[in-house]
Image 1 (tube, rainbow, N blue to C red):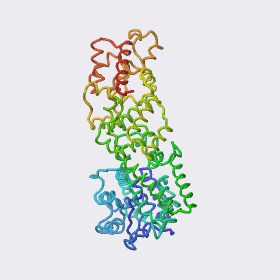
Image 2 (image 1 turned 60 degrees about the vertical axis):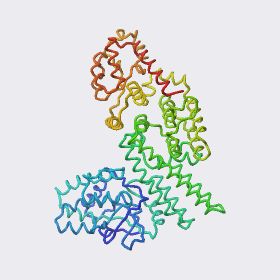
Image 3 (image 1 turned 120 degrees about the horizontal axis):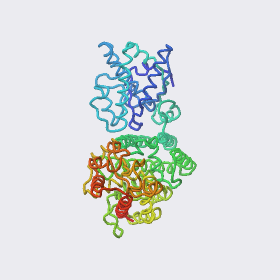
Image 4 (image 1 turned 135 degrees about the vertical axis):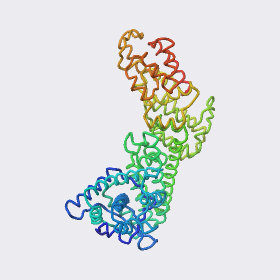
Length: 577
């Protein structure tokens, strides 16, 4: 352990970020905080501590080190220096570029794996021609753009060389360990700034520790490699999930990181808890490993447990990624994940079905042959989780564990899910919910079921690109045909009182699908003044509505009743019982 300045840290050294490390994760606020640290050091004219770097030696030479912790900070510092170098005169630029960025083809700092060429291109030619394929690459581009903006302001006020020399004087605490295993243990202890460790990173450190201590490092490489794959997979999931507006993954309902996936996986691995937190999963791993440590066959049990858990977790990450990637090219998967917003409780089930390769397999039950297992999951999400609005985690947790650890054939799984659907949303209750004020009770399901209804009656479907465009622009909106703030005489529309109108206001017969731009235009207009806007909609459900209102020269209570009955019968048949 030693305190060292940035200049001494880089002097005659080369650094590699191992594949098992989490990808670049700093956001703009982290970049700004680092600049604030630098500026504070300049103001007080003193060295300033900016964090800890944990290194491990490699077999590639005495001058090559793995960065086990601190990769976010050192990567960002490298990008800042790279941008400052562009503002130096030719001689200084050449010197500092060789010292901090690259000597010919050999770069001072490089991530291994998929980000290697991307990072080299970013440092060499900037971000303008780069297209990110995962979250880490997207954040690297955003970070570099933030750095470019900040540096352009700095050099207007002071010398780029003076600022660079201040960066050289920043201090870090450096740990250099002989092995990656030792470095990883230090990493968990000293991580003190930047992004806090996720429970999954702590789990990796825990497993490496037990491999080090009890298995003579036998599984170190396997654990590191497979966790590295999982961190890369997470970046892909996060990138596509955000791009395609999968609410759960994009962060609409709170931060989504590796810990979420570790939680979803747990119910397939253990039946201890059907709704675990990530810290609970970490505690479970600690307890199990400590139990095995006391056994006469401790080494064998520890090895088997670590192998079993890591392989199971990697398989889950891989399957979830395959599902999310399908939203890029497959309309059905896009609708289920991005428009319907598949419940997180069902992620373990759909991931196991992806692993089994049965999502496209036809069902075997009577009159169910035209449906497959993906349809069945969609049905359950629509009926149980969205229309009824309940979340039976215990049942799904047990089912997820059983299908992962017992021998269930397709018929067994199909029968259980059909039973689950009938138990939590029998036909009569489903019908009653559809006839009720569905907008108030089950608003989240409406874009999905109204789009499906519209596509069915038009016998055409939106393309995947059209769907993506609508979701990206948040253009799907639910329109009340008779407005929520009525500017019309209730009696002319067949209502005896305000109370009676309120009973119909949020029923499905008074709702349609409308582009957000058109919805904001119609606002609380009289229904007859909305016809022109409805005609301009691309949705057949809304175009037909305009035709009916024009033909009948009315839209009254009886029209809402008739429309509700017609749509409910369709939905009952579509979301079969």
